[in-house]
Image (cartoon, rainbow, N blue to C red; front, top):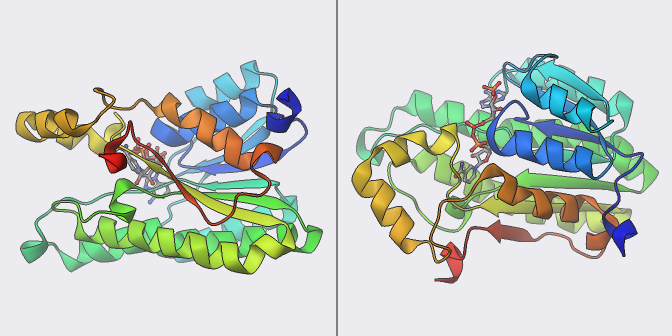
Length: 251
Ligand SMILES: NC(=O)c1ccc[n+]([C@@H]2O[C@H](COP(=O)([O-])OP(=O)(O)OC[C@H]3O[C@@H](n4cnc5c(N)ncnc54)[C@H](OP(=O)(O)O)[C@@H]3O)[C@@H](O)[C@H]2O)c1
């Protein structure tokens, strides 16, 4: 049974690995046995995540790439493809908050590029050796706003709804070729991404009141789903978006 979740000998790329959800995902994959290549805008070889992964006996390599820079993302994709990783976790993401009526187009463009277009560009390149080999796992970080409209975040909602569609589109084409594509939709998780919500007493209270589990999520709440979708345990799971949301969507 335990072998179902064993990732020993696997190489995983995790984007957004420097902090928050991505860091927890990288550490969970390493705890299950995978070596990690972490990517984020500012990731360094001596960041805390690197120390945690290495303390688990796995290797950690850091790549610093701005996902708003298309050329840099393509260069990263080519470099990673040459390493032929087994697992790609597309988790890096940004958010811009402003009401739709005055949401700056520059904010829209940046969020769509970082949270959607760069994700496809990177995945296309990193999936190539997976498809050639006939095995691989790809996980996107979706959102509750892959299902709902959100407030003050039209670009983010459009991007994360796009990620849901992209997950299904890639899964359709690649499941028969041994590459499973799925997404995890985190609920309200206490990270820098949601700091503005937690600082707004009214929003914070109304969000908390609606979470059946009665608490905000922690990044480590995403660990199990990440290992599951990366491992043999999910061999027949494809094109799904797995909410990890304390029951929010079921309410
Ligand atoms: N927190 C939530 O409640 C929640 C809910 C649903 C979905 N999500 C999604 O979960 C993912 C992780 O978010 P988080 O909550 O962990 O937020 P976070 O703590 O703000 O971490 C975001 C990560 O993404 C990286 N990143 C952001 N912009 C980037 C860029 N332009 N280029 C490269 N890397 C970039 C950051 O890199 P640096 O550390 O180097 O700056 C960081 O590692 C995102 O896709 C987010 O949309 C979060």
